[in-house]
Image (tube, rainbow, N blue to C red; front, side):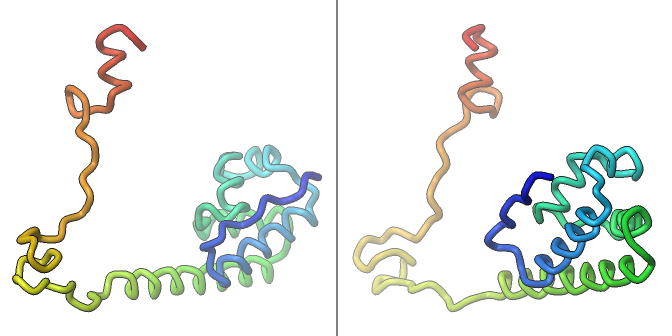
Length: 145
């Protein structure tokens, strides 16, 4: 059995516990990702995302994992961990969207550095190519790519 990939750095403690519980069930069963996919309604790539902490699994995936690899108690535990993970994500999202302190308006009231008259603006993205697409799409249309 191959070793697990390192979990994403920004993953919260509740999600780490959830993924750890899922990994333990999968390891205990001896099933591979392809076997999980063939025995559940979820693809191999979905299981890979769930088991590597890149996507929160839906409740039904947890129930199916527990049905194949564990017990009803395992399903209840995983569902409870998922609920905690969802609540933590929602709390973090609320914190991230709360308005912070107002930006410094500058001495001249423009919103930019004092004396420049320039309002603070986000950095601009480079312009897209013809048709609103990037350079590669433009090159393909021209027959160069």
